[in-house]
Image 1 (cartoon, rainbow, N blue to C red):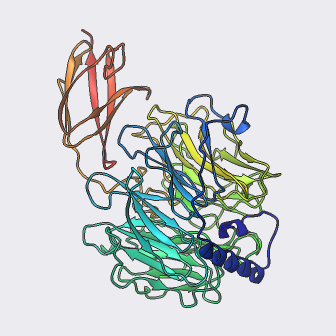
Image 2: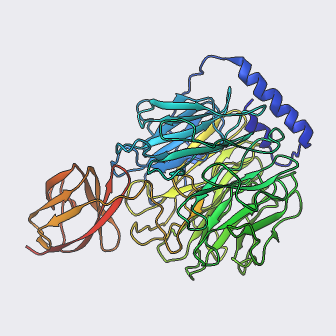
Length: 583
C-alpha cells in the first residue's frame, strides 16, 4: 500500500502514533517487495460514464484510467505544437498524454509512484524542456526526464523511515545563471544542479527529522530584493514543527525557523503590503492534526499586522496550500484556501475575510489546493477546488460572489472513500479561447486522469488574469507571486524572441513573410478572441498564405485586425498585430 493511502480516508481520523507505525510498515514492505512491473492498460472514455461529460464548448473532454493516484496533473506544451500535453502520475508510473488523451511515445515510465505534481523546465538550456518528478518507493528519488520519457538523471534523496517526496521546485538558487532543482523529504530539503549533482551546503536537515511524512513543498523567491533567492518550507516534525526560511547556501535565515503547530501545506510567497519585498504565507494543520491558523510573516520573520488568524477549529484545518491573486482586480491581493470543515476562504492582506466569505464548498474534509483564474475575461477571477462527498469526488468552481460556475460541480470518481487530493490546473489546452482543466480522481484501487471543459469560458491569452492557475502557481512550482501586477505565469526563463511580419498591413489575398529567431508555434486570433489558425514555424523566414486550404487565417479571410501569438520551444511568448485590408 502506498503511504499516501493511509492519509486519505475522510472522517477516519487515525491516532498519530498508530498512523506513523502503519506508514513505517508500508514503506518497509514496499522497499523489500521488489515486484516486477505491472502492465497498465490506458483506455478511452468508457461508454456512458458520467465522468466523461461536463463540457459544451470543447471537444477536449476525456478520462484515462490509471492506478490509484493522489497527484495533480499539469498542462505543458512539451513539443511546441500549440496544444498542451497532460503530465500525470499514479502510485507506480509517470505519464504524458497529448491534449486528446493519447499516450505520448515513451510513456508511461515506472518511477515507483509520486505524491505531488511534476515540474517542467529547460534544465540543460537546449530549447527542450525536462520533466522533474519526486518519487516515493522503494526509496525517495528525484528524476529528470526528456519529453520522450528518457531518463536524463536520477538522484537518491535522504530519508530515514518514511519514503516520500514533495513536488520539485526549479530555480537558479546559487545565482550561477543555470537552473537548480529542489525537493523536500522526511529529513529536510535537498537541492541539485541541472545535471543532478548536489549543491554545496545542501541538504538542509530538520532538527528532528523522523516524526511525520513531508507534505509541505519548498517555495522559492528573492524575499528581500537583495538579488539572492531564499527557500521557505513547512514542517510537521514534533516538537520543532513550523516554517523554515533558508538562505541559498543552505543555512537558516536570522529569526527562523518559526515553531508553531504542524504545517502540512506548502507556503506561498507574495508582496501583500506593496512594500517591494515578499511576505511568507503558511497554514497550520490537517484533518485530525493540531493546527487552526493562517500565518503571515515579513521576510525578516516579524509577524504582519492582522496575523495569525484562526481559520478553523483546532484539528479542522487542512494541508490545502494557499493561492494568491488579485481576485477582484482592485490592486490588492487576496489569499484563497480551504479548511477541512468544508469551507473555502478568501482572506484580505489585513487578515479579514472578504465580505461574503468563507462559504461552504459542499464537500467533506477538503484538503486539495485552490486554483485562481479569470474564466470569462471580465477582470474578476474565479476559484476551483476538488472535494469528497458521499462516496464520490468532485471538482467545483465559484465566482467571487460565491455562485457556482455553470456546469459545476463535475464528478471525478464515484464509489470511493478516498479524500480528493488532486488540485486543478486550468489552461487553454488547444489555444482556441476556451478553458479546460486537468485533474485526477481516485479510489484505493484505481485512479483517473481527466481533462474537463470549463463551460462557457472565454480566455484571452494576452489580457485574461491567471494569477494562480495551478497548485504552486507556475510550472517550476515556485509557489511565489514574485512581482505585483504580473498576471502572466512564465513556463520557462524569459528570453527575447524576434517576431516580424511583412507586409503589414496586407491585402486579404496576399501572402505574408514571418521571421522568427527560433522555432515555435504561431497562433492567430481575431478581434473577439476566437482562434482563426496557426502554423509551426522554424527559425528564420516563412512565407504563408492568408486564406485557402492551410491558410494562416483559415479558408476565408475577412478584413480586420488579427492578433498573433508566437510561443517558442522554451515557452517564451511574443505577440504582434496583423492588419488585413480588402483586396
